[in-house]
Image (cartoon, rainbow, N blue to C red; front, top):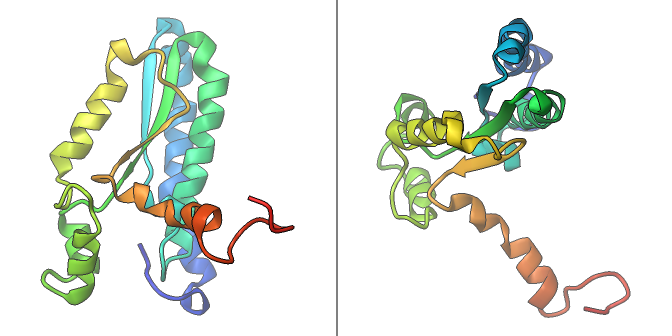
Length: 178
């Protein structure tokens, strides 16, 4: 994830994240379409991240995960007529080694992250695997170009800005009308 404030993020950090999160996905998908098109059926499930919505002390990781979502949406448009769907998953927070490395268990910051999850727990790798299985299923052929956030409802926490804009005292759209 290469955490740190903007000033600490380097071009090397960006290049490493682009290589891992974008270049690899593109190389894999470029190699597969002839066989997938010939079969008239395929599923692409890219692993993005909830961080694509924005995350403090991270610049390059969310940027590349957001770009992967953009690429996924383009691939859905380009490949759909061949029976190929392309979707992305946005997991997080998932209780596994990478989460624990960035968020020490029991720390106040980690507790705050976990308390903000509406379902009351961190996700498990099996939660992500189940969502991937859904997107890979033949019966999911009408689902393409989508992002499925596997985050226990945490992504719903982004609504307060809109809520404040609509209801907050003295906050509103330009011109003062609501």
